[in-house]
Image (cartoon, rainbow, N blue to C red):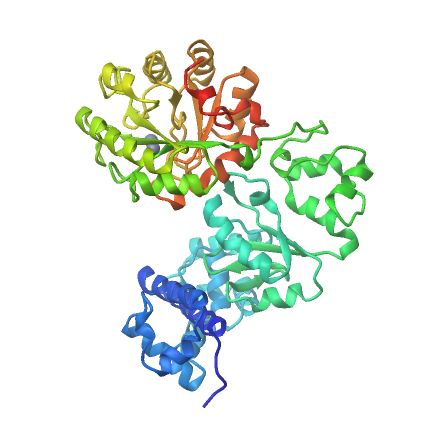
Length: 534
Ligand SMILES: [Zn+2]
Ligand SMILES: [Zn+2]
């Protein structure tokens, strides 16, 4: 029998298996089941090998018979035969290159087999020698497209930017494994990341990088490609130049090139000091500037979350659960803002339900005092600018978010008129996700923000920075304009679960990208201070 495998080695093998299943085109759910099992095993305090041997491993939630079989094989023989086989068959390196070139995993492997190549280098050589045409189904046009893609290969980019929640899950474990720091777009908290950089001063970083199961191919020596086909650049810098390379690797390119030539420094602080300008938070490194940055908003400044959902509409947790979680985060208050009926796709609260929900909130408040759950609503703005609940109901509530859901595509004049009309309702406190964008899916609407700022100043209605990772709306650029105009801003999560409350971090960093300080943000204030519109 082989050496006893500990939990983390078992998990690693399952992760590798999941990665190969992905590449081989297995169903998303199968690969995910293996990833989850790996996660579960890592989190299990008891030695899982023992459980496997005792036939008890299925007592762990999420381990089904299929995964149990693999675990038994792994514990008994030290390997998974199908994993080895998949590795031969799938040729992860080829598939990784294929992803760059816009080829499916299956197609990449077919082409490699026809050409009789087994490495990315072999693939490139064969392609450049004009041999792609030997492959059935590749004509002149397709060949030209692949060759052009190979030309661009030097600095590959994901086809679409990655949202912050995805990119962080992807890149943080890689950075940890190579003892490095995440730079590039995620360090600046860009809403969509295209350039992922990891800077490390560990001499073994490159070797470890090559060995990571997450990295299926390395192009150009230092650009790794993840299973998802996303390029990650590794910069290895000697400790005395770490600050210089971190600054350069963080970008933006425009910002950095205005500072070039960068002095040598072990930390960014040293580099900035040598440049004779104050250290600049990464969020403010888009356009070149050498201004003294203000004391930006911090997560710890936030005293409550003013937009979340519960099981009363489309949320996953109860009022009490959301309240407890918000309390545990150190907040003083939380506004429950479930939907109203017009939202359509999900359940919405009628007048009657709003009142019954009020009773449940009152009961939760007795349990959680002095923490306060506010009676709120995310009230749809109807097409004519009226609101989806009668005024007397809205008047009972502590916090009214007004939202456009249907009809985002209206022309600027109509959409702005409709929105402004709703803002003039005396019960409305905040305009939700004003520009209505869904990153990678739906562009911003035509709402005239300058007009909205004017009305916001007149009425005291705040504008939201919605922290859902595919919204981040207002964006950093919009926040900057809003701050300059002097309007009030709320950072919110629009959480639909307890976990969703953690997206406050995204809202805060988005506001920071707009140069916002705590004073610009309404929910850095006490409950008393936000009780009324003015
Ligand atoms: Zn909404
Ligand atoms: Zn919402």
